[in-house]
Amino acid sequence: MTISFEMTLDGVFDQMEHWFNVEDPELVRHSDELVFGADAVLLGRESYEFFREYWPAQTDDRGFAAHYNALPKYVASTTLSGPLDWNATLIEGDLAEAVRRLRDQYESIISHGYGGLAATLVDAGLVDEIHAGIHPFLVGNAENRLRTPHPVGLRLLAVRTYESGIIAAKYAPAST
Image (cartoon, rainbow, N blue to C red; front, side):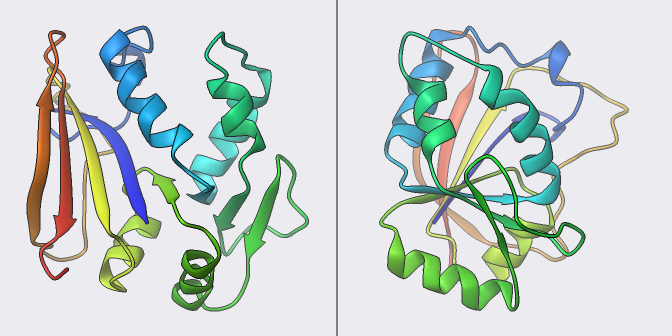
């Protein structure tokens, strides 16, 4: 299971229109590697609702949008009810147990964002890697910042820097 997210240097996730450049070729290449290598996607409710509105209307020459739209998606939510659209299935019952079953079923699962879902997965020992794209911007007064309910130790697996100033860091939980 891989968690992937993009943030600014000061840990901000929102106001992406000011700092996230979807045209950055290095970012595109990094995203392609992650998504084309995935067999399934795990999303929280907010990510699911945002991506469900965005991705079905997208097309590209690389086949990224078609691949992403076709991937089976699993949604962790206590407020949604099924059935879901966009090739998605609502996870019901114990989240950790459901994700363990998904890990047995799929070779490579990605999850986007670092909210409550990611924190739960890390706490349950279900995360193999965390990919953080750190963008060279400081937003300052923002609502959505990287948060975790308690300290989480990580060990660095790899780091790439791009001409645009983006740092792509790959970590694993220190306990694995």
